[in-house]
Amino acid sequence: MGSIEIKPGIHWVGAIDWAVRDFHGYITPHGTTYNNYLILDTHVTLVDSVKEDFTEYTIDSIRGLVDPAKIENVVINHIENDHASGIGKIMELTPNAVIYITDRGKKALDRFFDTSRWTFKIVKTGDTLSTGTKTIQFIETPMLHWPDSMMSYVKEDKLLISQDAFGQHLASSARFDDEFCGQYSVSALEHAVRDYYANILMPFGTLVKNKIADIQKLGLAIDMIAPDHGIIWRKDPGKILQMYLDMANDKADLRVIIVYDTMWHSTEHMTIPIMEGIKAAGVDVDVLKLRSTPMSVAIKRVWESRAMLVGTPTLNNIMFPSVAEFLQHLRGLRPKGRLAGAFGSYGWGGGAVKEAYEHFKKMGLETVEPGVEVIYRPSLEDDKKCFAFGKQFAEKTIEYHKKFNGQPTQCKP
Ligand code: FEO
Image (tube, rainbow, N blue to C red; front, side):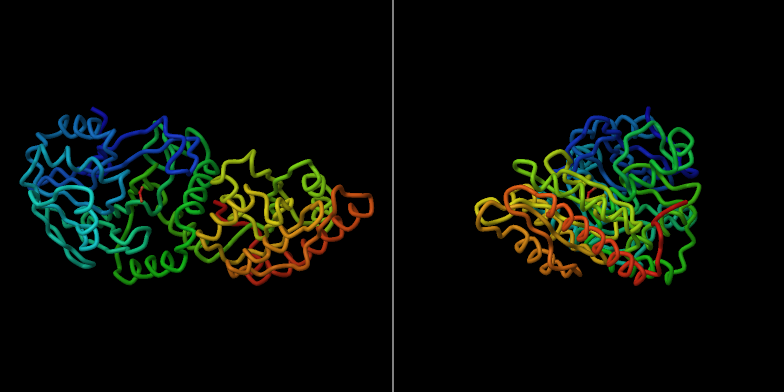
C-alpha cells in the first residue's frame, strides 16, 4: 500500500507528513514528505530510510512489494534524523543487509545507533553498487547540507536520488512535478523550492554551483531527480537545476523588503514614508513585522529581494529582541548579494540602528549609510526624512541590482 513506481522496478516507499508545522524551527505550513526508494532487482536495495515516527508507513509499503527480509542493500545518503532515525526499525527486519554510506555518515550514525551489529560498505564519489540489472553510482556532496551527505545516481534509469537537495516541504497527494502543477500551480512549486533553499541551503551557494558543475563533468544524463522531500522532478528536472544555479548566483527580485518590529508604533510609523519613498523611485517594496511573521517566511522574503531595510526600536541601548534574533539567524545563513540599511526610533540614548549596521558588516553585506533615526515619535519633518531615505535607498538598490546583470526576477518559468 502507498508505494508508487517512479521508474521500472524503482518504487517510492516514503511517508507523507501532513501535520508538521515546525520543522526544527522552520515553519512548514504545507507539511512535508520523507521520500525513500526501493529498487526491486536481483539484489533488493532500499535507498534512504525515513523519520522514525513514520517507519511503519515505509515498512507497510515495502511489505506490499516484497518481504523486507529480502532487502540486501540499504543506501543512506544522509543521516539527519528526518531521514535516518527509522533505520533501526528497518534493520531489525533485515539485519544482514549491507549499509552503503560515506565515511562521515558512518561516523555520525555511530553517535545515534549501536552500529556494531550492522555491516557497512564505506563509499565515495565514483563508487558503484550493482543491484543486478541496475548500477547505482555514488556522488559525495559534503556540506550539502551536512558533512555526510551524498547522492545516488541510477545509471540505467538516468535517475538522480538527491537527498535534501532539490527538495521542498510540501505534503500533497502529488508525487511528481507535473502532477503538482496540474493540481496547484507552477508558482506554488517554485515558492516551495525557494522557501526550502533560503532556509536550508542559502549558506552553501558556492558548493551548489560547484556540485552541479561536478555532476555535469561526470556526464551524467539525468531525466528524473528524486529528492528526499516533496515532489519528484520527472517532467522537467532541468528546471530545478536552473533554479538552483540562479539562486546560487544570487539572482533576486528588484525589490526592497522592510522587516521591522516596534514597541509603541514609532518605528512602525516610519515604515510608511520609507515605503512611499521606495515606491517613488520605482522599486517594489514589501513590509513584514517580525513578531507577526514566522522567521522562515521573513528569511525567504529577504532572500527573494535584492535589498533589505531593517527597522528596530532601541531597547536598553540595543536592538529590539525580535530584530536581534532575526539578524543573528540571518547571519548564520550567510546571505550574499543583498543591500542593507536600517532605521528606527529611540527614547534617549539610541544604539539599535548602529548595532544593526554592525550586524550587516559582520555578514559582509553592502550597506547604505547612515540610516535614519527618530527620537520618541516621528514628526512631519521626520516623515520627510524617512521618505528621502527610502527614495535614496531604492535608487542605490537599482544601481546595486545592475551588478547582477540586472536580472529583474528570479526563478520564473
Ligand atoms: Fe531532510 Fe538534512 O534532512
